[in-house]
Length: 111
Image 1 (spheres, one colour):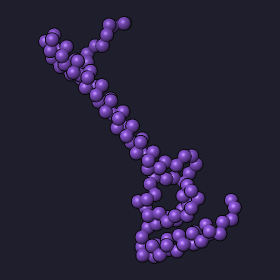
Image 2 (tube, rainbow, N blue to C red; image 1 turned 120 degrees about the vertical axis):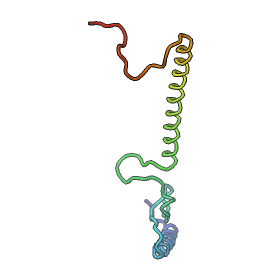
Image 3 (cartoon, one colour; image 1 turned 90 degrees about the vertical axis):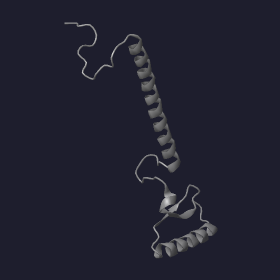
């Protein structure tokens, strides 16, 4: 990394700002952003991060994953609802009662 006097001045200003806000009891994190500038983040501004190896999960990706999970659940419930609706119609046509959870025999006996 090349020495940059202007960035050092901005870093000092950011550190001073961070120290002032931290002295008032505000929880802040001093960290470099993706653009290599130093920032003083409030706790709400950080998102979901981890310091271990591997990719860091940001709030944006956490939101996408949450949305995909909800969509998968909706598809699952819609599929089950469709299966149950068809079974209900068939039972009604054949004048059958709703089955219980205590199944006696499934398929042909192969013994």
